[in-house]
Image 1 (cartoon, one colour):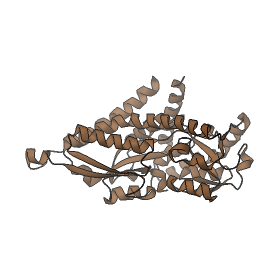
Image 2: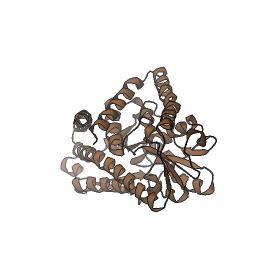
Image 3: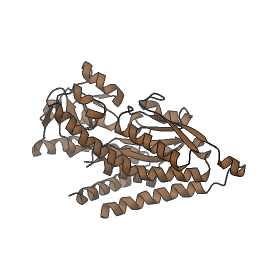
Image 4: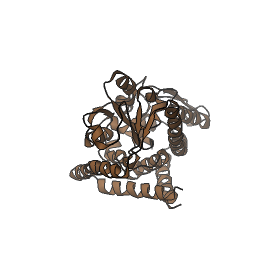
Length: 351
């Protein structure tokens, strides 16, 4: 209950601020005729079309169109067909797409405060990651996201290690080529592996061809991106579970062009879809687990002793984040403390 109260307050406050900002605009010139205008928007999504998060994005777009009575019409371009995963943010800023969904981590160094969301903090599930990421992004509203309108943020469940060779102990990772992105690549390095930075859309082929020998990912990825077909072992690394925060952002000019009532609809639907995306991540993890079980992949638990070793190896990543954010004058310590408190509350509320 305590978790819901804290997160609920932050999310409600964020929604209220966004609504207030939208409602502060006057009606567009032209009265009723202008209000009846149809706004056709493009939405670049890096997930493949059958992935549950692409499907959820499409459901969001359909709900916006329904509530606006067709005044907002959104064409979703999944699979990176409009802008590639690592070009999506810039594509939103420049207007290549009106809307975009991708990972903050695909543009390393561009989001120095929000990098805390991807730290190996032991995230329990995708719903918690999504609630916390949205709430804290709205609360801190850092300079790094200015220039676009963030509608909400979501994040996957705890990352695991999927490999072609068994990893039962820390020493087994030495010199293994492990795919990661952003801070998850840093986690691979900290654990003694050779990190290879790579967006998800390129990972299947890289695993299949031996360019990499493993990947850090949420278990849903093994089904959603079919990567379970090209790995043999899954090591349970939830003790150092990280998430990857993903933005749903809108070009600022496209947002500003909307009348206040349509901005309010986008804000309201987005607030509801924080829960829907979070639940979709949890559902996808459950389906991913069943998928790889069906492939008869071997699951490897870490011993208590190994978990202690792995946690110790990644601890400097958190310390580095704190030092770098302090050097840049960013409230990294406060942001991290908020995230850790919310994670602890979420864990305490679980059965």
